[in-house]
Image 1 (cartoon, rainbow, N blue to C red):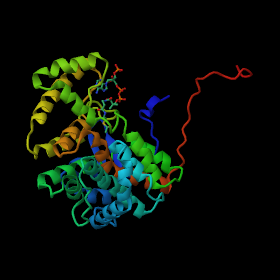
Image 2: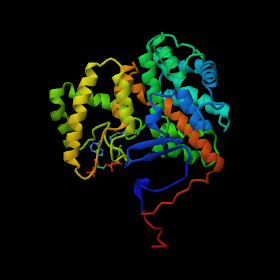
Image 3: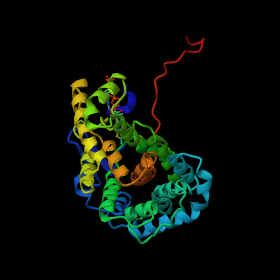
Image 4: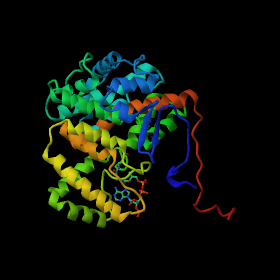
Length: 354
Ligand code: ACO
């Protein structure tokens, strides 16, 4: 029995492969090292959805989808303001058409990218900004958040982030999307299931708590004492460990490189000290199991440096991962079998059987 489905093969996919022993992520024939920092998110989305960088999923179509989302969901924003950002994005997405078309796929791709900055601005008492369909996706997201055109280094960092998290094998949220797609429900239903799975702190909900942990540490000299106390409480060090990677998470490296292109801030200096201490403590705690830095550690630093508040980090993750979810849902719906595993019953038996 494989509790947690460790090492269970549930499907075939032509989309991505996570090689945990080599620390390598392959997306449709390209390693992440070839892609991160080199291609735009729109090209990566086209690669995932069309199989080529220059297919029908073009930057222009994604730009038009951003505008369409804004004009169809803009009026809903005030009614969603009582929800946390992630919940509001999810609630708005639930209103999209639920079919398998490329048009719906593009709307889903655009939705978190448009809704997250709009919700954040309205929450800050500022007017939401219309998308500019002519701008690159990452540049437009930052412009809608900040109200002005961002510097190239920021655009490059966000683009690198979105590419880095766009797909990652059969992770929990992608599996959730495939389960729903296997019932032939629409793409929006699959995306909603994935959003639910992403939210948890063991998956896409970790980066906010990474910053909480850094705040608790406060200064490099306190790192050892605070991290030891966290471990002694039986809690986990957020941003470390991974189910599949047994060496370093290549996505952490891609994001660390993107951060290096931005201005070094105090938090980054602290984070480097915390990372070093955490890895040493985890090696001592679990000598038989490599617990390395995962994508969420540097995600927290990068999104913080870009000006996203920590309660919006998971929604920003969804901006990138949506491309993978939709590609997997379409692949599953096109050729997959209904996913229906079994369980072992350990409850009481009715009297006549016992
Ligand atoms: N801090 C302290 N101990 C840890 C950590 C950690 N970050 N990660 C694993 N361990 C320990 C566990 O306590 C466990 O110890 P035990 O055997 O004494 O009980 C052992 O290592 C194995 O842990 P599992 O939970 O079985 O490992 P799993 O493969 O299920 O965990 C996970 C992977 C969930 C990511 C885990 O490492 C974790 O909780 N990390 C912190 C949260 C985090 O960073 N999440 C983001 C993941 S990346 C992403 O989803 C995009």
